[in-house]
Image 1 (cartoon, rainbow, N blue to C red):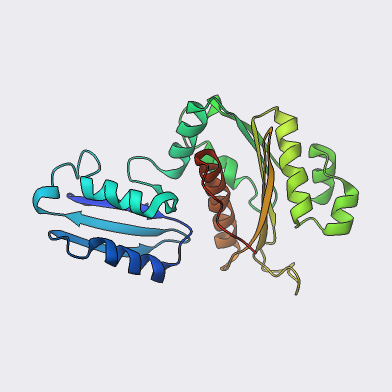
Image 2: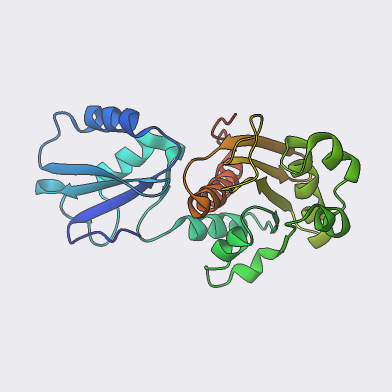
Length: 247
């Protein structure tokens, strides 16, 4: 996590191409004096570091300045964390505020999503639990994924991740079931499903949603990217924002 210096704000941005982000931020700050900014990259997120001066200096240490609020509104759902509230905290506050609970079924992420969600004190109020269903047998036995679905479509597929999300929701009796299955590598990929292919699924009382993505990097990066995208799904769903398009 990048920590802001005195008089500096850092916004975490997710799901937007860095070159495009640079252009639109340049346009936003054009003609605005007393402001310095830069964009740095993390494993998946980009960080917009904004140093404010002049009339906007007040509030940079204690709360968002007017310029920051305007920038956050301008970027909309692509801003998903600020220094005082990380992604997990934002999601937790949203779940608690809506009186919703969540459970997870993880394959390629190996428990990383559950770990991130439980980094927030008080998360037991909305996070009911998770299962690491790494093998096909565990998917079938623990959360009732159909063996026929796995045989026909594969463990890494749109159909399977939907059944995983439904299975987690039913197992824990949660409001939301979230699931991830994929190929973290370095082995296991194919021409049709290369290493980095990941499917995310989400089940609620009204919706059953899924999408496939292709992440790049080593095994740890693919796992981290998958977990981060899954968290972003929760945030966007609760906000009513569209998901980032996938495959």
